[in-house]
Length: 125
Image (tube, rainbow, N blue to C red):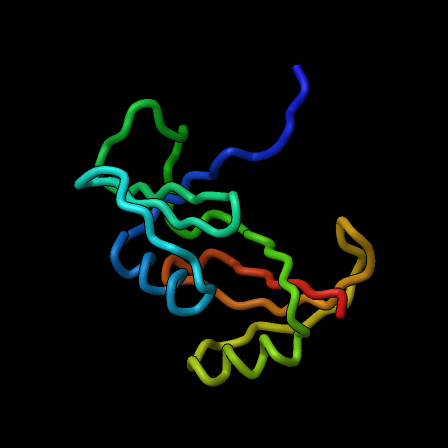
């Protein structure tokens, strides 16, 4: 078996509509309506499928839990631009750190989504 890329990740969330609004308004993702009960967040050729806690899906994660992930995104803008945008949208910033990334040295800015998942946005500008 040879993995080519990630097809999708599933996020378990407390409130699908609140999560959609956050990822659309803060991170610019597109909302995809899959079924009456199911939504996804699209960006580029990637997708996060959303499952609302308490609504059973089969199969599902062993212990589907909101707030249990740490997601890292790479952006084309500078961290200074991202920081200003987050501040304008009243998003609390948890830290800014420089470190090695998958494609070289990056500066990352950290904040949380409505479920308290840790969001990392990295730039090498």
